[in-house]
Structure formats: C-alpha cells, structure tokens
Length: 339
Image (tube, rainbow, N blue to C red; front, side):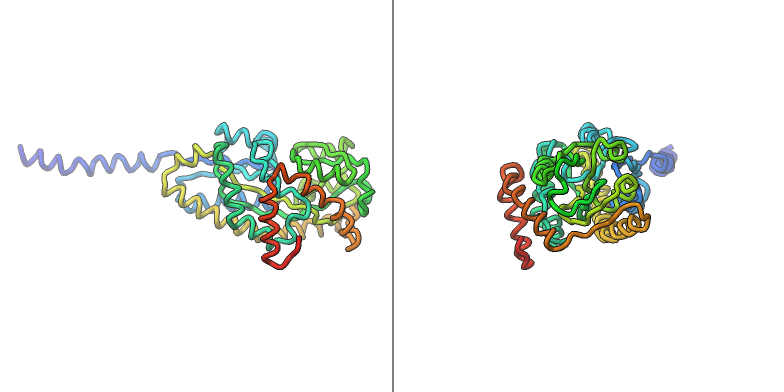
C-alpha cells in the first residue's frame, strides 16, 4: 500500500506537468494594439512593422503586436485619449500631440529652426533632454519608450512660396500646437487645425490652401497631387515619441518588458536610419510626377524666413520653457553651431 502511495506521489508531478503543458501552450498571447495615422510605407509605418516583427520574435510569440496604420483605428485627435483609456496600448504620435495633453514642453520640437541638423537632434532625443521630456508623460498615465525620427519639413500650397510675403492670407493646415499657430501668424498666414487624415480632402476642396509636412508624409498621402508648389525649406522638424499605456506596461512580466525594450531599441535604430532616405526618395518621386513644382530656397530667402520666424522662439518661451530652449541651443554650441 505504502509503495503504491509513494509511486502515486512520485508520478503526480509528472501527470500535472503533462496536463499543464498543453494548457500553457494554448495560453493566449499578450496583445499590443499599435495605432498610428500614417501609411505603412512611411518611416513611422515601416518602423512600427519592424517593431512588431522584432517583438514577436524576441518574446517567442508570447506577445502579439497588431499594427493599425493610416488612422484605421483612431484619428490623431483621438488616439492619445484612446491610449490613456487602454483602448490601445501603443502609439507613436508627433510631439505636437502632447501640448494639448498638458506636456507643453514637447512643443519645443515645433519651434522653427530649433534643430540646425540631425546631429543636434540626436544629441537631444538620445540624451538627458529627451529622457527628461519622456518622464513628463508618466503623470498622464503614459510611458515614453523612444523617439523616432521623420525629418525636416517642407511647405506646400497652390502658389509659389519663396518670400515671406507669399504666405500672406494663406490658410495653412497645422497640428494642434500653439507654436505652429504662432509660426504661421508670423509669416502672415492663417493657421487651421485639422486632423492628419482630413488634410488631403481639405486641400482638394480648398478648405485650406496649403500645409507643412515631411516629403514622405506628403507623397504617401498623395497631397502633392492637389498642391502645385512645394518649397524645400527645412524650417521645422517632425518626429514621434513612441508611447505605451503605463498601467498596461507596468502589468507586464519583467522578462517580457525587457524583451520589448530590446525590440524597441532595435526598431528605433532602424527608424532613425531610414528616415532621411525615405524623405529623399519621396521628394524625388514628387518631382518625377511633374505635377508639383519643387523649389529650393536661396540663401537670401532662407535668411528672410529665419528673421521672420526667430521671434516665435521668444514668444513661446513662457509656454515651452526658456531653460529648455537654451539647453537645446547648448547642444548646438557643443557641435560648434550658433543657433
């Protein structure tokens, strides 16, 4: 009898293990819904897809990333609220989205001519300044994971924009950013806040006359087809902060979080490498259509634009923080650039 009980006791863990194995194998993966507002063939779209691939591989299928591009799940005015409510777990919104949320310091990225080149930008996003900005999202129920590059902006409209006077009276689409509002008022234009997904139709129907964006966003949304003129100005920058719902992130097993952080680092390196080429290719494709006149500002015209737009920095010091602006200027100075 004792022998049988002992044998049963010894066999029980094996039986339980054999029964548990299929249950573990059948356990549903953790789902991350990753929503964004641009197409899959933009720098952000490609980076989101790369993160999905890397995350699922790193977690051996314990995590499933569902990517929803091109505003198929939420428009850009809705997506941050959806993340806070837990309806989606991950986003990569442009920095302008955080001003209305209360983290107005992120609008420093919207300031004209704040980043002389990508080297300065990288020092900001990859250093203490960038990390400090991401920390400001935590009280909003958001964890900031990374900054993804897109590129420097161009202007489009149905008339040439060479001189500052060319903007007078134009209705220009902007994101919801006090800085961008001030920027276009400084140029003599009338800023109009519109969701990204509504811009093409607004341009087509004349609700707005023009917009600013990166070449890749313009080309993939076919905005160039309803805009006769494009000015390569590099006056401002568009980038994204990859964010995740804090409650969701904190609930993940520690090993899963570590694996996802590794996947995000690799996806971020990928995003920041491809951004410039994607924009260069898009600009070349826009030129090739022959439908849009592409114009490069002369040095004298750049100087005129800069003089008109530099007061925006002073006007926005109280909003985004004078010390923050000065800290970015110091990063420029460290590379021998006077901003």
